[in-house]
Image (cartoon, rainbow, N blue to C red; front, side):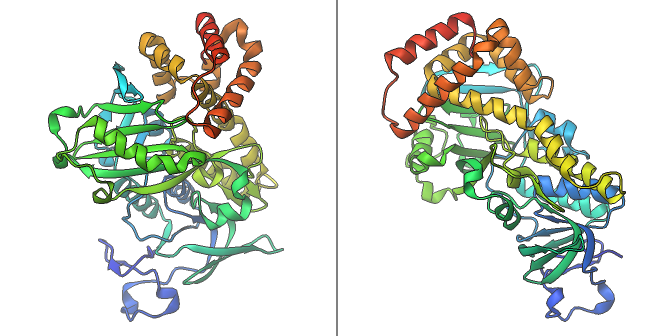
Length: 458
């Protein structure tokens, strides 16, 4: 029998889940549980989508793996909770049981005006509650043989000279051959490998609200809503999720103080709440950090590696972290399996694979974010008029197209001057973030018109 360790509750199969049992402080009948071993081949710090996927993949291959998480499942998580379509293909298991709805369109506004809608012939984003989604993934990993210590976060770790990692928790020490950090933007493993300067940091504020508190005929369950251009960078969103909606705003930490007023103004303008008085204090708003990979980010150190948000593998344009979290988890699991079997000398293959398969997309979406921040009016006009741009974006969400290849095709023979466009965009993005109230300069407008004519938007 394998114990799934947690807080004071019984699992459906009769196995006790006991987060504090390493302290021997709960007098449960010994015949009802088996104390998990203190040594594992792999320990995964964090039970979010990335951590649970890594544990599921490894356990399915017969690896003795443990998941440690400071929270007790099921637990809420501050997140938009939108799963882009390609995630369903990347996950190693079927998650349809926790999918609440499918969305195939988006309603855009620019500075709360200029509203228009775009639709695709297939779903491009699926809605899920992170409380249900994460819990489901962890349960499936445990079913495959992973051991879960929830309510038991990593407090520190030490790599010894014998190729092992000693992991310290509030419930005692565990050891492993490989430690996978999936503990998010603020986790212990993430902080050990990278400081704050290793990432481009953004932040988000969001909340989930029951559908019954919304004016029903003002919300289309298959349609996302996005407002952009109101802040110097970032956007506001509404993601329907069946009986719930997720509503939030996000942007660089440099303008973090403006996010809460923006969320309030967004709700006032959308007019979907069943109340004349909008108060964020009544809506259980929570915040989260969104770190994005840069050239300073470290992915591994000997037998410790980071995945998902802990590695900064968040797409900077949309703030999506689940898709790259899942992808990096599977890449990490493959490399760890190779290493455990003796097929490779170290874990550097993980760095190489991430740099080849994930980072180029992050780099190019970061460039596009800078372009949008430098020319927000132009981007809004082009997306509203040219359906090809929207359809191309949908192909990326569905995993049918890579963004960096799409950019190359879009610019064609002009691709050679892309570096100059990028430099211009980053310069004016920095200017807008430093002086949020500054209007577009005449030179910006002239460059924007030139780029529109040659089709070099991307």
